Amino acid sequence: MYYKSVSLLLTVIFLFGCNPEPEKNNVAQEHIEAIKNEVAPDKRVALFAVEAIKNNDKYILKGESNLPEAVKTLTNTLTDKNISFVDSIRLLPSKELGDSTRAVINISVANLRSNPKHSAELATQATLGTPVKVLKKQGDWYYIQTPDNYLSWVDRGGIRLMNTERFAQWKATDKVVYTKTYGHAYNAVDEKEIISDLVAGNILEFVKLMDDYFVASYPDGRIALIRSDEAESYFGWIKDRVPDADKLVATSKTLMGVPYLWGGTSTKGMDCSGFTKTVYFLNGMVIPRDASQQVHTGKPVDSVQDFSALQRGDLLFFGRRATDTTAEKVVHVGMWIGNNEFIHASDMVRVSSMDPEADNFDAHNRNRYLRTKRLLREEDDALVRLAQTPLFKD
Image (cartoon, rainbow, N blue to C red; front, side, top):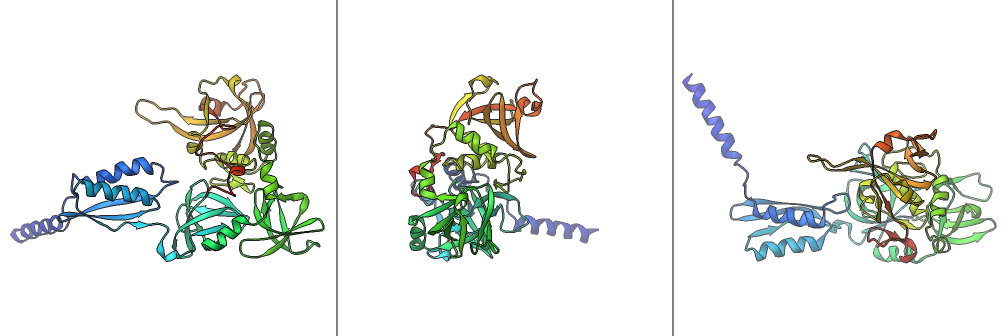
């Protein structure tokens, strides 16, 4: 019995001796959290994954970030506070990428994942011709940031890496944009051999016109023919992309019946915010990716179910209202099309009504309605008008 007690005591001493209690007052971590809350409150669009580990009389700063100014603010703050530290933070883009820190989506629709594996959650999608920033590489996967700042992983087949010179050249060349909901690019005018499928919003480099076809180039150099009645010159198309209510509603109707796909933002499949994002993009605007981000843009219109105040093109948001113990949670979005109706992706893209007497009355969403926001003609840093940028937000 004596030996068992001694053995137990030694085990306890060993365990606690090798695993000291974490420092309760980690002043460096407090400054990290304060800066993170300011510059990266939404980890979907900004990376500031930094921690401070106490090592004797100083802190070791570990982690990574794509916000160099935020890291500089942190180190300056710690210096000013006379807090001793070692900066081991990895700044992105990673040095191992060299000059290849840009890329362009190389397939009709690239699936972007939450983690670097095909079994990971589908976070979002990006369509052919979308320029992205490349931040780091892990195996055959690349961590990228899309023009709406969304952070996610893409496999190597989804992008074409470019150095600074090639990327600048790509941005400057004439483009072709595919405008039909779905179709194909061909190897020759007989259309017997398909190069790839295409979806609305796909962008390729313009090579020349040939009969009734655009000859266009993919980011990886493949040459294809696209029917001229299914595409337009990008720069001519973008000049006509002055969003108005009629155009938004007309575009939304072309997507009727497109299946619901969690994480989808293309005409192959889309979730609710992917639908509104696609409708606005096809009318020349890049808006935030998720409903919980879109709700923070534009001008407030209604929050009391006064649907007479709404205009076509307004976005309606649904979810759980805030209480004394729980925060508001936005889980769904749709677009107002008039006549007490809104169009949204739910099971498929479809039209629902707020009128209890209508055959398509949507009691579920009316009961969880939160508010409406207006994005048309509103100035907001989160709303990017393609006609006012070289191609996309850089």
